[in-house]
Image (cartoon, rainbow, N blue to C red; front, side, top):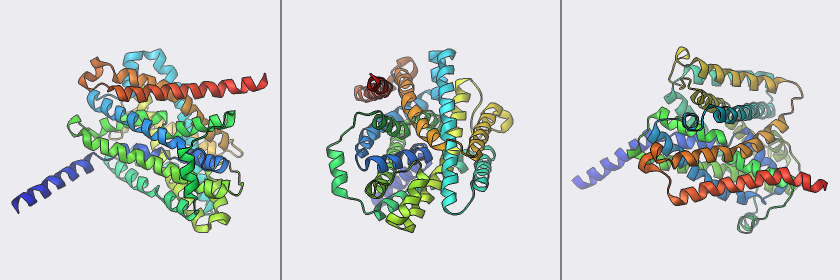
Length: 418
């Protein structure tokens, strides 16, 4: 009896530790399925059907390895990735990397507000109401709230993304064809298909995620003694990322692709699902888009403000007051305002902003990964917590493949003109 109670007490103690630690991995993974990601997955499903679902498997493996590296590096050093890049690569390299990432993330945040506008229009709400209301709401959450409050709200948002599973199942997918496309992957050698693969990888493993993940484990004050719980958190987040992406591609592949319906954005997918899978499937898809967009419109500017502030030595953190971190909060506010204004401009090229922001992510990712891998293998920085050989093989392999795809994307148009 005593032993049973002791075991129960030990179990609940472990569970309490896990729930105290959980957050950074799940939140980072879930935000990855933002409006830009949903648009990319929807377009991939509509154009290629189940043909590109196989890309999610290598993306999942690389995402797991990279997120683990980020968490380990943040916990061991107590410094953000931006800080470490600045200290070890110098200000000039840091400036060019972060200017590129800043513009990319303004495009990404604009896409989130496009998702807010598009999803709420399906429910009859004008973008001139939905976008300003959401912008003010997320600003108050971050500027006036605390990290604990924000994290709890983010975790609720994360669970809401599972609505895409429901939407996909209502579309009556062909599981045999899905299995075949995964077992026998194919890649068409064209500029369009290569751009789509880079966009898929760029949205599944986005550069901003690496900075946010590292900053959030520091903000939460995690320690290496409980790292196994952090690994569970990361695993759950990565699985959630890929599962949601899978079901979005399945939903659009089973309906839009089968019926030859072409779309340009996630809102189009929700509208097009109505006559093919029913009104409820359409509304569930639109609700998922809204939740994802609000969630990511909060996190993306926050991640950007974190890594730019760290890169240039400014104070950063949600738990700090405005006077303690002026540059951090000013940057966060500026990104929100610029992105919201772009959406409210009539006939703004939102589709181009959405897709190409993901392509830019895919092109910038190797630069960020190279910086990360060099840093985490530096014994002066990491001590005994440097990478194991398998982690380096996967990390460098991802760099080589992404760089190769990016070069092919640039070279193919030139070859086709010859």
